[in-house]
Length: 162
Image (tube, rainbow, N blue to C red; front, side):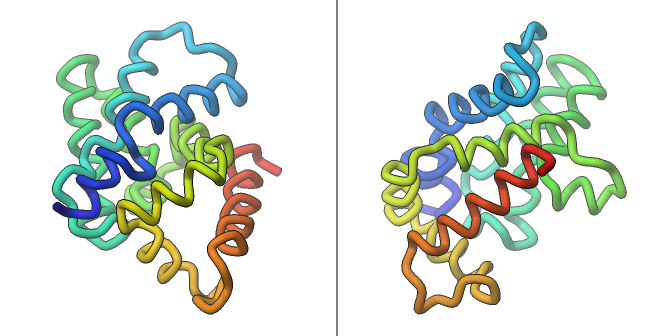
């Protein structure tokens, strides 16, 4: 089973838990959404991780496309772009600003309790990739809690515009 599939089933992008934390992030940043299309975008934004070998390689960064395409079929081009731009990488690639969904998605990391996040990341195999991608900031000989603290602080500042 691929890391992307494991992420959706029992990892950091678990198809029930992650949308709950993204919704919570949205509510903290913008209030309770009134538009049901936001709920659908929150539910589908990471569905494209299914079958991905890695999450942060060139193919993994395209995970945004599947959920965005489904949202476009349902609601049109505006919501396609809204969902697509939940990725900072994709936003940079298209020379666009990230959508509001991006900020709620990043805040979701901070809202997911460490005691839940780290075991999910280890079980799915995501943590190895995440730690490797971040090794210039948090060397691999540092423990997972030090990595988590670094990422938490960075994403919290980004999401909240601090």
